[in-house]
Length: 203
Length: 279
Image (cartoon, rainbow over all chains, first blue to last red; front, side, top):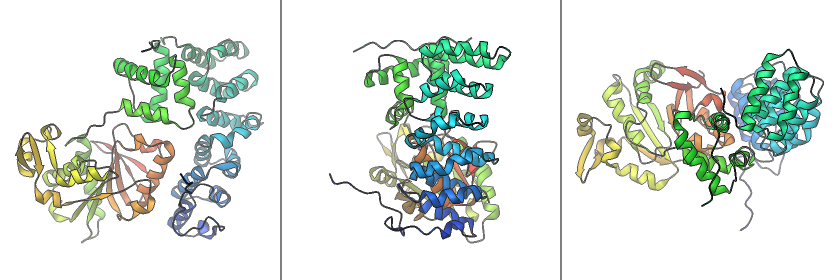
């Protein structure tokens, strides 16, 4: 069976650079259409990544994120990662959601994200990794809880491990209660995670 | 046939949370028997020795095909007249009055039923409008009904149904809009069949969707649950494209647009929650 290339949207030629002008159009309807016209595999992620942080219209943002998820690839990931530091919660959450869908291309960044000096970025990294469909995700999160000093990052990782952790992780999870002795909410999260991992009945 | 190990309460809780997050379908302890049987079936089919093995496959499989296989098994593909009637009540009691207030004179109100399968939903819509919407004669109303399956569309155009499909239609209403054919079969009257336009549409094709024009209300019930997350998002973009500003979209009872996209506003009407394109 011959290979069939995906058909690019009408009016675009994947052999030529797509002009970015319309992404900056004054009319949001045109900008949204411009974003969706770029939504095909190997499409021009760089244009969209440039536009995303300055785009204020929610529907256009959504279209840019949809397009970036369709395009995928390292360029899209590189454009989205800096948005984890954005003060704009909607933009940040949009970036997290998009990165969660880019399993293969996010993987090379996991280690750096978990070593980021900003604990918020490390929490967002946990949010991304817990949703990845990657067999190493539990091991990455487990390693993080063993060395992480910030309680909120640990708590986020424990929450994630409740779903994807394995029984061999239980002894290390139990040590968290000694590392953070006066944090009842973490103790509760650890107990719940262990029950989920071992399959025990919940009270 | 190999025996699978029983699913523990903790494992069930973990599955319940994961499945709800992914699909919007919530199975409580009361449904344990239903769920356990289906999980055992899929564990057997995939050669999973334990629930843990199966859950790992479900959770990390890159293609997501096993999750889809499980969704198909957990959902009931049944269509009949007056299914999830509260949404039709919401249409005539809330949504359409709002649409009518901003509709310019002479412009039709356009409603899209997708996927329409063999026609039960669009005909129910039409009957509900004729029976219950006070302004029905003041507007030109167009109902477009689409599906990707052309055999289903042919059946919809013929409009012939078994008694089971029409069991919830009150007999007085049935007498007005159906002809009894005998053998427990009922056919939609010709005037009503002619009033609905049936077309083939592939929701994954933006251009094909756009060719049908714009709509005031879309019903897309119990379809997106069968799409992967990315396809759901693309479908939401297509619906946004073809809805007029202020237009509404109704989804199935287990589906939530808020989990798919932030393009739409949530509208809580007395009878149902629907989603609205911002004006």
